[in-house]
Image 1 (cartoon, one colour):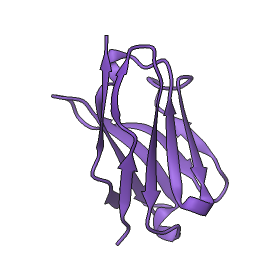
Image 2 (tube, rainbow, N blue to C red; image 1 turned 180 degrees about the vertical axis):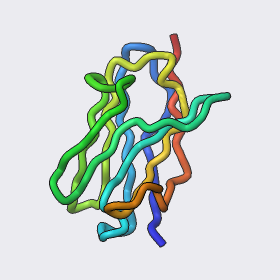
Image 3 (cartoon, helix red, strand yellow; image 1 turned 60 degrees about the horizontal axis):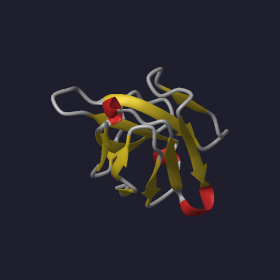
Length: 119
């Protein structure tokens, strides 16, 4: 069982920045990819960004590309999401998730952290 703990949410003004962190209890085949998702009120959960440990590659949703940066610290089993130029529409609960290589579903999820962007 992989444990994921997110931190760093809160309230920020539009145009501001915020950093989220997701600490995993292990870095194994079960955490090949670590990703961020978000769910805004009344909307479905959506993909934000993903980081792959084996080669350091990453990918972003179109809505955040150029504003958000995902990175990983292997020594801490932690993935970060640096969010810049935040917009009110970025307001959501942000979740961290992991999946094994080759799997379509994310197997483990964190509890989520609220990000609120005031206009």
